[in-house]
Image 1 (cartoon, helix red, strand yellow):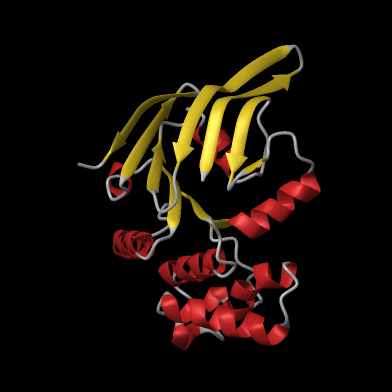
Image 2: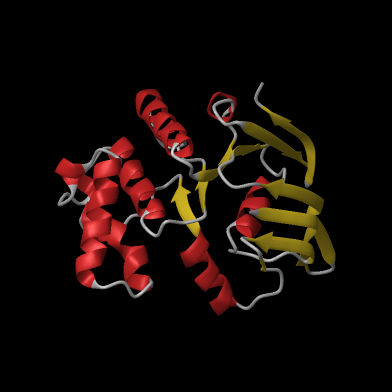
Length: 225
């Protein structure tokens, strides 16, 4: 589903060029659960941005679900993001004055789905993450763990090829974090492809595959025994 070959990302700051990624090769198949780990400044955030079509490589090839995305314009990248990728962020990124249901409906609204179908699909996703009784609550009325469940429901509602999670337990207490990790395991068990960016070794070990990045290069790629 994901194919990267020789991906480099170079940032220019005046006369100085900084290579954030230095020729990354990475293939991820459907229904894999991959954790990408690395220290601050390792390049994992840049890799996440390219995987999520939030940025494009300076050089190299990136193919997502059969389509080459390197070099595409912003509008096409936005279409691909909405169609193929569900995002889960550390800070939840929910609209504070919208209900949980309305937050989950947003990707469907952008995709042009009708109101009745939007509501039905968003409701079903909130039930799936065990928030059927919180649909009308706004984010300030929810706990951190509940807000992350809303974010996960929003990521899933468009039936994406891949869920891309960026430090999804980073702002949660240990109990809530464990519940979110368990939820990701359940989603993977039901066939969802998941790529998780994390610095937490305990979270990473739940994945079926761990990719370690350091200084812009993949230094280890191992599967669970």
